[in-house]
Length: 300
Ligand code: NAD
Image 1 (cartoon, rainbow, N blue to C red):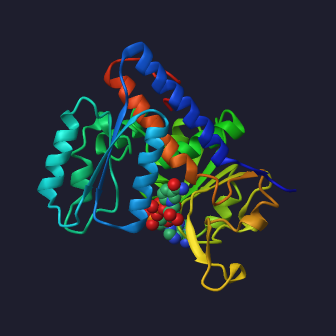
Image 2 (image 1 turned 180 degrees about the vertical axis):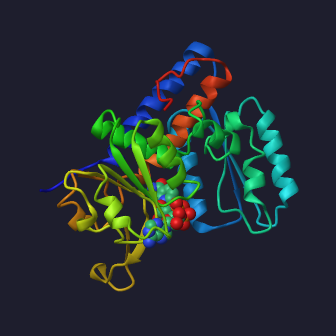
């Protein structure tokens, strides 16, 4: 059996086109343009690439992008003051503080200083609490992207058994919350789980977010299961030439693809969904701030 490849790149492109349409609706019918502010502290090269990509895609869907690049000497008080300014700026509907922050800044404090209704990353404790209790909230972008791919692939998720491997605040935990909300029976495995392979063989849906290449093997997978690989790992690729590297996920892709019903590739699976969902959250946040109905029905 060879599994269907879930085309996250194509899905994200379609989603961005819908978001662009939603932006046009807000502009033409309500004279409002969604604005996303991204704050980067320091010069971490990976973060700089993410922020550049976010800004480019924000503009491409017709939103306004506000970039705040601060030196790594920025104090916590200065960062909090900027967030307060953005919280009260009516042209800013979404605020994202790029993580990680330098060590001298308390990231939890900073995230919780963002107005919850502008917290398009969905990390504010108010959004975590509301989403945990089944209330409408801003939902973290990567798990939201995984949920969209799963719904597109499977339709209703009701009654499915789902295993989430990894329990981080940015992927694993919010993913488990979303799957509970989607009426799945959810198991969460983490570094202390002793029988992950056994749990995995029970699962109709497997979402892996660990950061360990090749962790999930073919004999872990129930035949026909849907496998979502969130992991992004750069490994040496001597076959491409001396010093070359390539990206892989947490799933032993070639062998798992022989057993699973459907699988996301890395790259081209979950990765492109994250920024698209950030833009979806910004559109939703903007519409909500004016009490306008979500123009594209993207609210999870
Ligand atoms: P993290 O390091 O914060 O969390 C990793 C989790 O894996 C922890 O909960 C830990 O308990 C668990 N874990 C570690 N070893 C394990 C094992 N052997 N078995 C089961 N669980 C184990 O990582 P994160 O921020 O959640 O990211 C996970 C991966 O997803 C990374 O590769 C990261 O690059 C990737 N990621 C991708 C996107 C995207 O846009 N596609 C977004 C965020 C993270």
